[in-house]
Length: 282
Ligand SMILES: Nc1ncnc2c1ncn2[C@@H]1O[C@H](COP(=O)(O)OP(=O)(O)OP(=O)(O)O)[C@@H](O)[C@H]1O
Image 1 (cartoon, helix red, strand yellow):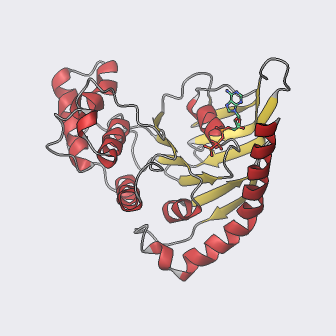
Image 2 (spheres, rainbow, N blue to C red):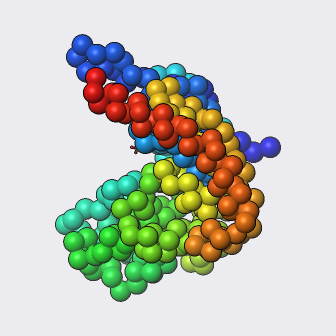
């Protein structure tokens, strides 16, 4: 059997304290696996450690204990098989949309003409054909997200790590983007692009929005409130694909799954909120 795209084994993340304070264990005893081509969402109360886990998966943060494996190889630095999309987009304001999308390919030393061609191709696939010469400040929030998506996908990563990428968007734009991500994730590779390592990408998607998690995923993992956050439950989302994220919410199976997961998540959300108030007051 082929190894999972991403495997977090028994992860603990303890942060050093501010002067005079106690160290804080944000994540503890956390194991999580994403198979090649699988779409997994992680939901949990605010401040529980979702971004911390994603940073560990990205190789940006070394866990205090445990290890990460990427396609069976122990991760010891940056996860080069993964592309990231964070809450805030990382577009450089002095580069046009096209130049931003080309950037990663240029770091890979791809010839300029090829990098430009691929950037144009991906801008078109995310619905921004003809907008390549715009600077980030000339694009709407949704367009900047599309550019960031093209920036991630142009690198043809095997794993995509997303940390609440659409939380700043209005509801309609957000649903459009969610559907587009699903279509791109499910869709065939395009002719004319260099051969990737094949097939669908594995996605680890962080969100605090349970509806979004269910609508998009194959599996939803619920994290407990901190400190020492760990997975509390795991749910297989057996809704048929292709899905329209707005329409799928009306299906009885969606509602049943929502009720089932919310029964676990609700108490954690309340605990997480109370703990944040306590920590703030301390
Ligand atoms: N570098 C750090 N030093 C100290 N504490 C940290 C550090 N990074 C995160 N934390 C703490 O670890 C906990 C988890 O943070 P994290 O950002 O992973 O949570 P989250 O679930 O992504 O939050 P949100 O839902 O608000 O985005 C929080 O209590 C946070 O204050």
